[in-house]
Image (cartoon, rainbow, N blue to C red):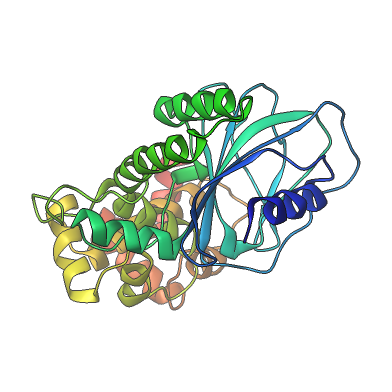
Length: 301
C-alpha cells in the first residue's frame, strides 16, 4: 500500500486531513509506517474500526491531553491518562476504537507481524510472537525520542527521507522486541524463566479469568510458548508451579470477597473458579488453616 493510500485511510478513520506518513517497509504484508495524526478541534463520536489484522500500533502523544477512551474487542478499557513521554500499544487484531472528543497530536508507529518476523530473521533472533504492554503501555522515553525525530523529518521533504525512515525503523524494531516482546540477545531468557512481559501477561490472564477454567495451554499460547516450556519457565520465575500459583490467586481473591458480608460462600466459590462451595472450603482450609466462614468471622468483625 502506497503512502497516499495509507494517509487517506487514516484520514477517513479519524476524520482529519491526510496525515504525513513515512514508510520504511512498503510490502503489503511486511510493512512499517509512521504517521502524524492531529486535530485541533474536538469531534463527536469515535474513530472507525478497520478489519482485524496481524499488526500493532503505538501511539506516542506530542501534546496532551490525548485520546481519553479506548475500546478493544468491543469492550471499553481502563487506561491511564497518557503524559508526554508515554507510549500506548494496541493490537490491531482487536478492532481498537478511540473517542475523538478532544484535540490530539501524536505519532502513530505501525508494524505488521510479518515485518516483525522478517526483521527478527534478519537480526538472527527468535521470532517475536506478538507485542504486549501491561495496561496498554506507560512511560517510554525511547519511543518519545523517536516520535520527536519523526515529527521533525515530516516537516521536510528531501531525498534522504527514505534512508532516515529505514534507520528509525531499525531503532524502533530493536527497542520494541525487548521492551514489548522481550527478546534477549541470543534467544530465550538467560535464566530459563519467563520474560517480564510473559510473566505479566500470564498474571493478567489469570486475574481476569479466575472464574473460568483457564488451562495452562491457553496461558502458554498467549505467551508464545509450549505448555511444557511455559510450566518450567513459570516455576523458575516464581518459585511455584502454575497450578499452585493459580490456586493462591483464587484464595487471595476469595479473601477480598469474604470481607463483603453480602457475598454468600457459594457465590464466592463460583466467582473464584472453584467447582462448588465444598471444593472452595477444602482448598481454603488447607491453605489458611480455617474454613472460609471462620476466616470471615476472625477477620471481618
